[in-house]
Structure formats: structure tokens, C-alpha cells
Image (cartoon, rainbow, N blue to C red; front, side, top):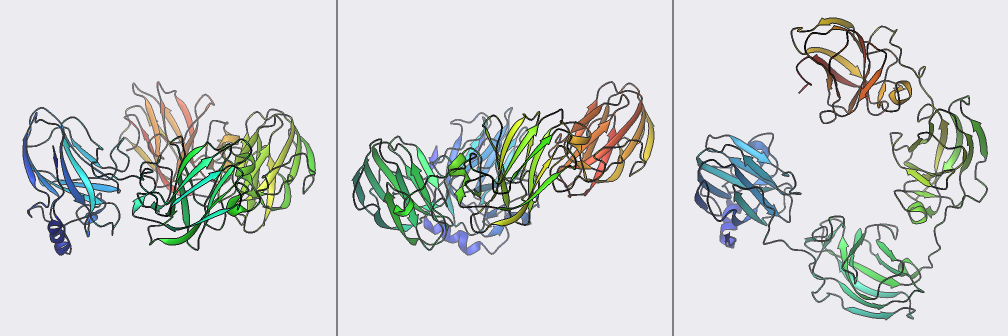
Length: 583
């Protein structure tokens, strides 16, 4: 059953009262209902307007969003043997706050499997009144048309008020009818970019910008196999393009035509109608823009294909290295960047701008070690490598601090053609390329080994099965200069000191052994067990690591607590328990 939205008068009441605190005793804005367990139909669905001017966190610091002073809806519920589900659905990012019959507050932003829609479940609901507020995550959203759903079966994301771009509506700025090979290339159409609709709605959730419901232009295009089709836009504002092709698929772009202008290139375009929306990246007012339709390039400029050519001589020379080379790393100073769009040239996950020719060639004879290629710079750089088997491998930030890094496990022998790019194309950057068999970066710090013979940083303890208190807690400083994957094995992650952080001598009883870490940082755990084996973990509970030893051995456990990224030392709590992981 669906109730219509309240009249504008009700919205005025909300606005007038928005300066007050939320009041569970106030009359609900969109009515109330009394339901008994086993009610039908299920769900009961109510049309409401979400949002308000009161911050939900004032009620409980676990609550999010902005609500009105009065409840959106009241539910009088007589409980039985069923759970109770309260959820909301909207085109906006909404939140949910419920004051239960016992006065407790329950809040949610995004329910599992419901996208940006909230939901709260009560496994054993109480009988009584549930005061329900539906808010918007962001302030200043106005009052968003939304649906409130009450169910004993599950959450619902149905929204009768949902709006999506409609390619069947008459376009704001007219229609172009063009045949492949058309003259007067490019064709220009003046448009107004922007609107009140989120471009991600109904377009696959990967389109950007604010648009109107109707398209701005229809393009009826008779294609052939001789021409590509270029759609682009130019404006003083930051604009986007959203296009639905003749096959019904959505194509979107933000900045590919440079200087915050969008551009879409269609190779082997299909014949038929293209519905084109001119979007505004932010929710600001509409902006004047010019749409270009061309078969030569963005804005009608001649499109020179982007190419990375490994056959050209490299900009900064080459080197031949055998496995086990010294010094390690081998460093090359160079200028990163160029005028070739790496994504256009290579595709895949490759990003940045580089020169057509490689920056450096590595002729490598592989052994038993891994191969690390990385770059450091004060700017944001990227790395593109053509491997000996002809495959392309790319990276943006894996070496930390906007520095790229690529690790080859069991590397091939042969030539590696290497480009160091800049993420944007505005200016070249001074950079250093590093070739190593030990780690990313410009200097492999420390001995490169974990040494359990060194005194532990935070002391040691001898514990016997049944120890008390449980857990045994040690405050440590996580992190260090040594890469765990080189020092302890390829399955290990993080950076730690050469010395262990803690040394545990353990005599087991009948229980298992749990070693875990809690920290505000992203930490890792590396343990050398009594048999000399390395045991590692990264994320066992969120970003906190934990290792479970079933039937633990007697002996010494040397424990390192690392940070996932180099140079990110952080305080952490190491817990040793026979009952379970740290919570």
C-alpha cells in the first residue's frame, strides 16, 4: 500500500520547526499506522520527504544525516514471532533514525545490499511505538521524495518517486541528422549543461554530473566502417557528457577532452539515435557550453593516435642486469611525463602522460628473486612497462606517497621497456627510476632481514596455557623500514623493524593461541613460530590483523607488528589470547 506524499503545507511545517531539536512526541509529518505481527500486505510502504535541518549526530554520535524536528512516521507495532525491518529508498543518499519503544536510538546510513539506502532490523522487536526519521546524509538537500518501507520479510529499495534520465523525452537543444562523412565537421550545438538529476541514476552508477531528465541533443547518425565518431564539449565550467547509444548502453566521460572538458570517442559507431546529456560536474547552476560532433577528433581537431613505441630508442639509455646485481637498487634520473595519453595508447588500468619512446630499457637475466620497478618524485607519477612477453603492466601509487611501483613475481628474462609518466599532462616532473630485487623505493633501508636474535622492541613474556588475565596486552609501535615480503616471504605484507616487537615464550594447554592487533592505522602481523616458519596476516578484522594457531607448539614466537605502507609508523595494541581475536 502506497500513501501519497504530504502536501506542501506539511513541508512548510517542517521548515518552520527545523530550528528545534528532534521531538519523538511531536506529531509525525507523514502519519502513523498500527500493525500486528503477521500483517499483510508486506511491506507497508509510505511516501515521505526525507531530510531536515537538524544534525542526527546530536542524538547519538553513531547517527548520521539531517532530519526534521518531528518524526517522519510513527509505527505502533504489536510484536509476535517475526523480525521487524524498517528501510527507506530515495534517489538521494538517505539515513534512518528510529526511537524504539524502550527509548533506545538505532541509526543506519547504508544497509547491506541496498546501495545508498538505509535499513534497520530488529531481530526480536518490542511491542510499542517506533518513532521513525528519514534524513539525508548531506545538509541542504531540501526535502527529497522517498519511500519508507515496514516489513517482517526484509529491506526494500523500491522507490515510486525515482527519476532517471529519459532518452525518449524531447531534447532541449534540438536534433542533428548526420551521415558518415558529413561536411562542415565539426557540427556545433549550444547547450545548457546541468540540471537537478544525478547522472548516476539509471545509467549504471558510473556516470558523473548533474543533468536534466530530458536529453539536450538527439543525434541520428548513419554510420559506416570508415569513420570514428567523436562527441565532446567545451565550457568555462567543469562539465560532463552522458550518452545513451542506439544499443541502449550508457557511455560517460568527465575530462578526456582536456581542461575539464569531456570527450567520448566511439570506434566503429553503431547507426541509430544517440541521446546526449550535457552535465555539470557539481550541483551548481547550469552553465553555457558547446557540444561538438565530429569524425576527426575532439572539438573537430585532428586526432593523432596515441602510441607508446618500444621500438624507438629510449630517452635515458639502457642497462643489462643479472639476478643478484649490486648495487641494489639501480637508479636512473630522468624527466617523467610527455604528451601521449597512456590510457588512450594502452588501455587497461594504465594512466598518465608519457613520451612516445620509452624512458629506459632494462635487459634482465632472472634468477630466484622478484623484480621491483618503481619511481620517486615530488609530483604524482605513473609507471608503464612493456614486459618481455609483450604484455603491458601499469601502476599509479603502489610505492606510496603518489609514487608508482610494479612487482614482478618470478620475473621473465628479457627486455623491459619502461615509461615514467605524470598523472596529469600539465608539466614534466623530475623523477628517479629504481630497479631492485629487494623492494620499492630509492634506498633499501636496513639489512633487509628480520633478526629474531635482536632484543624485542617492547619486551618479552613467558605464558602458560590458562594464563590470566586473558588477553595479555602489549602496547607497541607498529611499522619500520623493512619490507615484510622480502624479509619473511612473498605472502607477507607491511613494513617493520629488524628487531621483533615482542617475544612470546609459550607453553600451551588445551586451548588454541590467538595473536592479534588493534590500531587506528592499517597494520600487519608477522610471526616466526617455534619451528622457524613465517606466518603472516594483513586484514583479519577490518584493517586489523590476527593469526590463529590451532594446537600451538611450545617455544618462542617472535612477533613483528608492521604498517601496510612504508613510513606510516603508528601506535598499536598487541593482544595474546586463548579465547579469540581482539575485538
